[in-house]
Image (cartoon, rainbow, N blue to C red; front, side, top):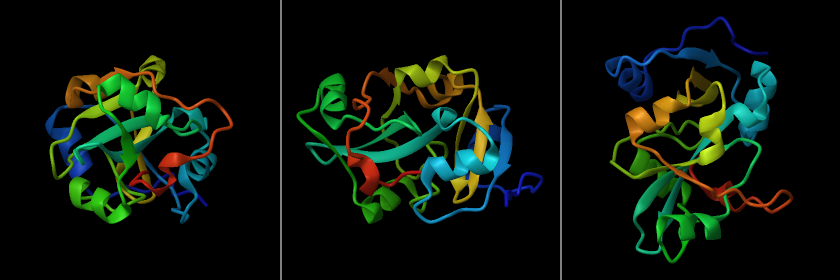
Length: 176
């Protein structure tokens, strides 16, 4: 059962958005372990394509980075590495992702992160009218205009989706 009318207490992500004067809507839902974006989209009644997952990855020099991808798509780490000029990119282990972001895996938001990291966004996310992205807690998404990702996070657009039907290489990563 969705918690559609619930108010969620402040998180570092919502504090960041409020300080920046960004308008957002709150979308709490009942968190399900390993439910991912399919479960949150189902509970909230929104297309999974508009639910954006936050993935904490690292390049070949072990430098962390954030990748924002449609919930129903996977990241091609090969295409991402090529797009950002790295030899390779791989998901961080959950404990490493948590240390970099300050968020629990399953509640990772790109807003209000502990450590400054470059942010990359799948370019087609920016064409959506509205996105739903983790608000800094498991079971909580915020609805925003996707332009906020570029305006507030300096997110760089990249073309890094894996072809449909590919395995989920980022499934181990710290993600929404």
